[in-house]
Amino acid sequence: MTNSQPGSGDLAFSDTTKIAVLDIGSNSFHFVVGEMSKQSVKILYKLKQKVRLADGLSDDMVLSNAAIERGVEALEKINQRIQTYKPDFVKVVGTYTLRNATNIADFERAAKSVFSYPIQILSGEEEAKLIFNGVARSHTLDKSTLIIDIGGGSTEFVIGQNKQSDLAASLDMGCVSYSHRCFPQNIMTNDAFDKAINAAKNNLKTIEGSFVNKGWEVCLGTSGSVESLVSVIAQETGQPLSKQAITLEDLYKLKRLCINAGNSEALSIGEINECRKHVFAAGLSIMIAAFEVLNIQSLKVVTSALREGVMYEVFDAM
Image: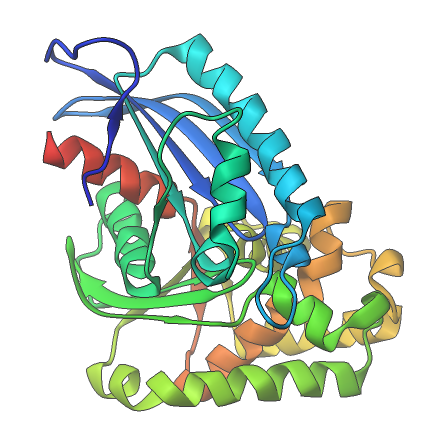
């Protein structure tokens, strides 16, 4: 995966290289600019835009005009940031929504009017491995580690150690898609949770054997849904986010709080922002299913994810 495009002129290789990465996710667009060398990474700029592309994906996988317009508007803003930072390389990747949309050509055609950089559509397995790469290059993984990333349209699972991923999978279940499917009108009931958790369990059964047989010693989670779940527990215990571990009992407690609230609009837990509230129950359901099916004992959160993995991949390929 080396379809990087020079950002400005010819690259004169020096001690540092400026790389920009855009992750076109199903819930958010993540843009980061970093200055990289063999010794260090310095993040110069980060931007997260809630676009919720998966909101516009129909049952027959057609991306709506409204979703395309939201995406193009976000790309126009990001293109302005690229011009400001003038990176040496720009890499753009698309995930679940773009790899499943039957009218992806419509999105690409509209995007080209404001954004000149090619979009590489990642397979689910490629996405999982890049997520692992981002975590492994930012944290010490000296024990066999399971990493979980709950996205807007899919959830990635990968087991590895040190800087080597050994087993990777991507399942079509995400916080945006499950919100539509199981929590219409943002209503959170026990029946709605049962529907979401059982649907996720059915998906997880396809990887249960291989992942349980492979085994792991440490479990980590990354990206917005996982961060929001862990942050609520961390705010209650007073632990720093990076040190807080969550258990299945913690997840059940959050489920009870959601059911008591009844509707995501009435949800008052921690400092979860309004946009995240609407997908909180779906992300929680997926995590409960993962804990139950894979027999996960506890999980801690890390902040590195796909975009960092892509950035390291670009740098390594130079």
